[in-house]
Amino acid sequence: MKLRKIMAGIVATSVAGTMAVAASAQYDAFVMYASGNWYPALIADASGHFEDPNSGAVTEWTSGTAEVTKDGTYTVSLSNIKGTGVDEETGEEKLLPAACEGAAVFNVDIPDLGTTLGIGGNSEGFDANMTPAEKMAFAKSKGVNVTDVKISVVTDGETTEVPVDSSKILFGDIENNGKLRIELYNQFGDTSKDAPFNTSDIFFNESLNVTFTITGIDAITGGSIKPTPSTTTAAPADTTKPTTGDSTKPNTNTGVEGVAAVAGVALLATGAVVVAKKRK
Image (cartoon, rainbow, N blue to C red; front, side, top):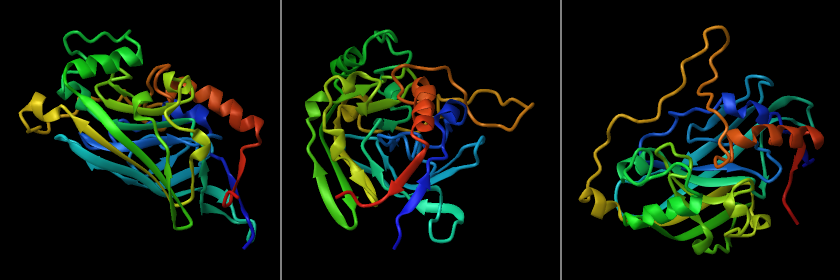
């Protein structure tokens, strides 16, 4: 079979205006990921579908989520990733399987859990200007901890464990939006200075999996979290043009909005073409 050239059509400059803020259920942990070369440019939520309104390019995937409402060990995943590309054999543009390599942004997000646990947002003692490490220390001071983080990748049916130093991972309400984020790696964030794992170990064409243990929920909530209306709201729609979701201002901690323009330049500079193939 000929190698298939996959067009990196999801240009990151459009990411900030197209993020879906309500794509995940409350307390459902999901993987947020962008590969090292920004193709797939962004898998920002658990919806399983991202369409660039400028180019029309599409990325689709299966998001394995986990409802986090008590202490325990959870696994989340990405699999079956496809992107708009050109089939070299037929010349037809369609969704094609995409191999992913490296990591520019790699987090596990749990919507609203930070607010519920009193470790972020408007919680007493929380300061939005704290560093990510300080936000993690604040979460720990309330009894919340994330440990035993494991990453694995699956390529052509073969599972490979990625060595991880859990002590270097950051967690807490890093974005000041009520989410509990587990920052595994962010090339524009503090984890890039002392990475918990080697990003070159990330390569997969089937699935990317993260397992983590979280404690402190039971002690804070009495062992029961009852779903409440989400505290995350979308920006008002602009009726003068097609709706593209929530357009939030850049945040240097997100790994998404604040780096969109940089990623777009990177894609253009490389010709925005990636070959999906097995790494030797």
